[in-house]
Length: 242
Figure 1 (tube, rainbow, N blue to C red):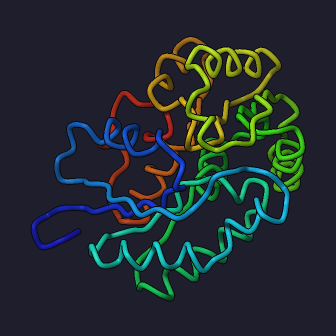
Figure 2 (cartoon, helix red, strand yellow):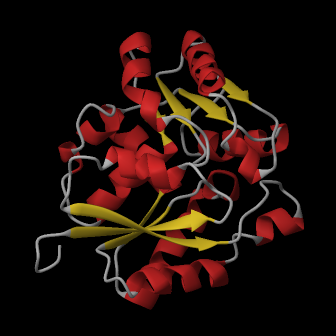
Figure 3 (spheres, rainbow, N blue to C red):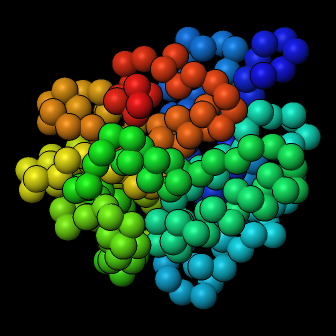
């Protein structure tokens, strides 16, 4: 927290993402003393190709983090889900490198999911993504190895990162309902460039289980890293009450 009583959150943002900035601003509506600040690096495709994986090399991410540090943010969060298919250890190492380079606590969407599942005692996750089948299978394997069974899943088969934002809200909601019907204990909407955050509260009321959206989870994790109270975000899903 700054001398003026402000909490500033730095968000590392994929270059082609058009969802997370407005969604984060919407989630923070009514909390004038908490602000979000964004720094981009290039991400245009989600594939398991060398080019697709190479987008998440540390160097450009750390450059973007250093720019956020200039704004004296209280936490820096990687607002992307690459570690879902690259592995939790990738984000653990990234957080350590960000803090080493900037002196600022770090968080990520995927480590936030893991923490939220653990705190809510979730073991059967309904996995909803826009991704291709091979990326989805990699997420299922990684999360399954960590104790989170993602047998209930739906995905759109897309790889162009910009296109994820164009998946209709109704389609995302239908996928959430489908995985809930297969016995998931919680729904995870895994992608920070897909609709989800605005519908979480309504879906939780309808389905009777937690719905964890990537943008909301990242904000929750960033608030915790900054030492702020996530519970100040009300009416936006169970994650902020964990």
